[in-house]
Amino acid sequence: MIHADSEFLQRDRSIHPPAFTPDYKTSVLRSPRRAMISLQSSLSEVTGPAFGHSELGPLDNDLILNYAREGEPIGERIFVHGHVRDENGRGIPHTLVEFWQANAGGRYRHRNDRYLAPIDPNFGGCGRTITDENGFYYFRTIKPGPYPWRNNLNSWRPAHIHFSVFGSGFAQRLITQMYFEGDPLIWRDPMVQGIPDRSAAERLIAPLDLGAAVPLDMLAYKFDIVLRGRQQTLFENKLQGN
Amino acid sequence: MVQPLPVRLQETPSQTAGPYVHIGLIPLQAGFDIFETNFTNVLTGPDTAGERIRIEGRVFDGAGALVRDVLIEIWQANSAGRYNHPADRQESKPLDAGFRGWGRTGSDFETGVWSFETVKPGPIVGRKGHRPMAPHINLWIAARGINIGLQTRLYFADEASANADDPVLNLVERGQQRDSLLARREERDGKTVYVFDIYLQGPNETVFFDV
Ligand SMILES: [Fe+2]
Image (cartoon, rainbow over the protein chains, first blue to last red):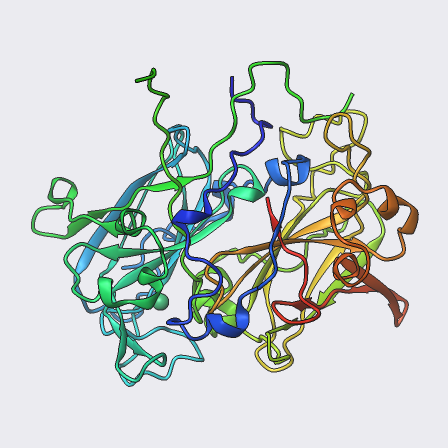
């Protein structure tokens, strides 16, 4: 059986970028160098925050409309959807999924982004939703553009959407990025290249999903997310005392 | 050949939150107002039980420079030491309905200071067969240059006897490493502030946990 307070399976760090990836220069001084201390799950790790629909607004999962002022944003309209599961293959219901991105020109609405591509007056670039009872989510947005960044002089990020996901325990907390099938910048990107396992990196690339496209309106991409799973406990649950 | 084990899925790889994490998670700090409800660094409401505290700190990189674009989230038990989560079955302790126990903030773009308004958590039952855990707050740190979110714990320096028995602190070498997990208490204008600076790298490197 897998209980709500079952311990997490140990994280397989070989499928994540290590802290120190010198080709991504900012990681050089921001990477811890000591060995982490491995902890068995306690209540502090198996619990985590829950969020309710009442905390979200009706347009929070619609980036085409949630910052529209005089009109709609410029760019390719897309539908993004997927399934949030744990490593045990179980859908994760009612969990908060947040996303943010550049506009179609590759510019972020952020006081620190000074790229010369213009801000879109009708595009904010962020949204959020809560998975349904089976762990599915969706939102619609504008396809983000690639953008240059100061790493090497001619460094360009592939088009991407940033994702933040919670799960049911704080140890499942994850931030990642979704890339788009067919983008030639993906395998030139030091953040993607930081992932030591190519097949793991491929799981960040969302395929075009024509079956979910809305005819005469927008294309679709499917991005599934897997959070950490829990150990099966065949004996009585051992986590909590007494 | 042996019988095959059931196939597990593999976790989605982490990627850095990047320099613009504020847009998605704390858009007011990115410079615009888009959501009706914003997640904040205030965990308490008017009815929250317990000792009101502020925790604050700064984050430093391996060259000793301030990291001023970091995102920090905290997760904690209430003042009785119970988490607002169905897996916490410490039924002898009250739940505090208005207290989720979670907050989020960014370090200030100028000063690098981050802070939360919360209550001091109570001690929490340990794993079966282990002593109780001393009061602590779980921290999760993401930023540009951090490839996978960092987990650590804030313990309270003025809880010396509870800390001495804490099963997690006792896994950490005494001296600088264990001290890196202790927040020091200050009184400022009649308010209790616990100061917790985080060092990503270097001789004072904070202890991070693989949880
Ligand atoms: Fe980005």
